[in-house]
Length: 107
Figure 1 (cartoon, rainbow, N blue to C red):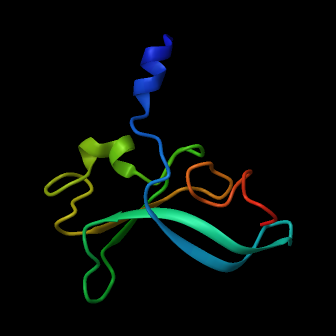
Figure 2: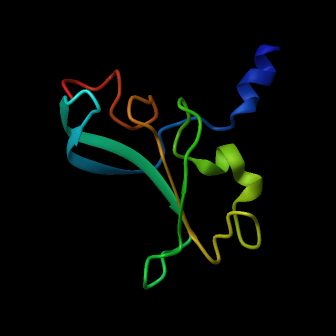
């Protein structure tokens, strides 16, 4: 695969988005991380009952920008219909696009 094809394959990879702080996060090992930052993005609006949320999980190295991954599926009258649903996507723990990860100091 050429380097140009690889560069274009994933779209704009950056740490754009909002940050939520999880005060304490317990790993499966039992270790506790304090003040974990999670980068996320949303599209659409939650309804009054907040039962219209779609959570999109993605590649382990991905960023929170669903538009750069599955933009053709996101928007009004598409599979991830933002006129009906609030779509949420976050960067994974340990990722390098805004969520607490290898560059974080003493998480």
